[in-house]
Image (cartoon, rainbow, N blue to C red):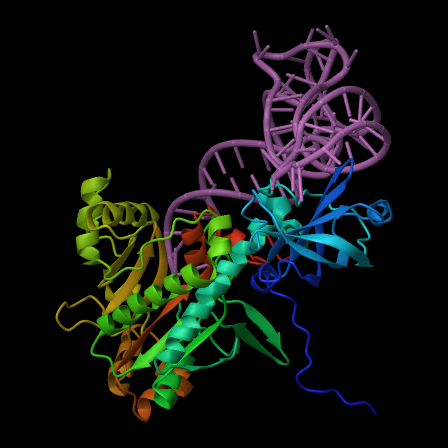
Length: 447
RNA sequence: GGUCCGGUAGUUCAAUCGGUUAGAGCACCGGCCUGUCACGUCGGAAGUUGCGAGUUCGAGUCUCGUCCGGACCGCCA
């Protein structure tokens, strides 16, 4: 028998810690990203868990080190941490570099990389980029995008935790689809057919009866055969649901605070990634402009070629027009649109008694794209059953869901944010696949 | 599901009206270079032009088929 002690896990030196070690000897590990050979030796750029660091191999013994050194080897380096003027800010853990004293290769690649990871930008066609995802994501720019997505996820979690929400994990294998509209993926489930969850909607609402405020970050699945730069068939949904609201505007207020918190977290803790990606950060909004769908149509109609009045939804061109208008006229890159018609929103959406035919629902647009849908839900059992029937649904098929309403629910509402879309619009990348680690679309099921 | 567009070296792209041996950058290989940071410099190798048929004296280029992909729309986050 052996014993595994507590408190001895090894953590790599962070870039910040490394920067504080100038004048000392340090040991660090990393992958060789680039070897710049000169007559006297070489500069070796290591890619580490949180950034790049430049190592110098020179003097006695350098020939032996450099002889078999190749890109994408995993190495452990010991050397003197020296102050240095690094021109490239992405190789810049506090303007230090490592004068190598010893270098051990702990792993070597089997094959040479088909792409050049050491260039400033990865000059690679999207199809090759996605086919080579385990490799292409090693590029600092490519992986920084995923880090920003992580930042949004953290901001979402942190903020909701601080505001009394409980994180839940709901099933992704379900007996039926939640919302209608979007097609759902059937899966063979022993002797039955089940479906991949298109939304945690029902479970979130049940969660309101349990915890009052709940949230979840997880995958959702949409079987729609769309083929665009803003759709994938599996994406990460940042969902929350909260009880004791007056109407949908309480949900919107919380989202504005959530966005402020997330943007501030990114600014505070993800500045290397944001500067590497040259992100134009929106000012964390003190308030976000809000229009009804009818008002939105009036604005976009005046800007565009078409008359949108009476359309039950915003089309993509309108989303772009409205965001341009909001940025120019209201100085905000976010804009809410409310009061979508009853027939365009799911059966659980609360209707607005003050505006018949419309719902207490909203979308949030950011830089030309819909990134959030939310609203107040129906919490009264009889009202929900009546609306199901009106929508041509059989309440008996939803008896499990309706337990929540049957045994009492507070007035509540919530929303869902598309993580990849939000990240893509922040970064200004044209295709959300770049903000997805391993995207799933109509054509792509690998890697 | 609809409408457009594309496929040329490892990779990113050229190639004029259908006309000589399909070119260039990066990567790669070899040399040179005392601080690079998209290092520089000299040389070299690298191609079944997605696949198949057709038109033509001649096809990367035109036609048809086929495979693969991209963009937009519908729909959605």
